[in-house]
Image 1: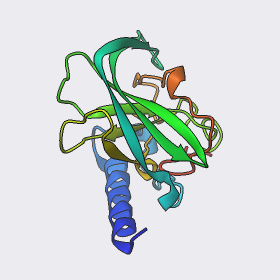
Image 2 (image 1 turned 45 degrees about the vertical axis):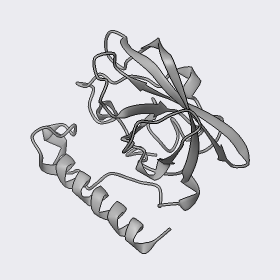
Image 3 (image 1 turned 60 degrees about the horizontal axis):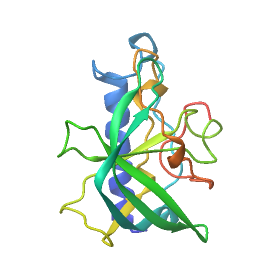
Length: 181
């Protein structure tokens, strides 16, 4: 992992900490911001930057995702990613809401750190490919960029829960940790 990458990641994390500590739209409750001393992260690890093979779902199936506080939300399963991690093939699905064709690909997931070292309901990755993806294309997934949804910091937010098809049976010690894990 290059020094430039680690520097960029550290800079991005510092920016996020500043937003969480000071911005009016921070998910950290105002009464807790003075004592907020930054988010917790796993150390950057090149093993968690993987190349995945794309399978596009031409006729995307709707998926109802439960949320942390409210009605289910409906997404479309638009593609799947197969990748190697810890010597085994893993698969994650990517979703978009029906009305957001140009939005980033939403990849919520759980892994063996969920509820222990990372947020109890799972974490998210967003992918913004530079070109339209086709079957067999390769796309990078960087778990060092995995983050907790806002509901991890305040019950005033309602966040989609990763569907069971995105529960990985492996450990992802990369990205954002829970504040207490």
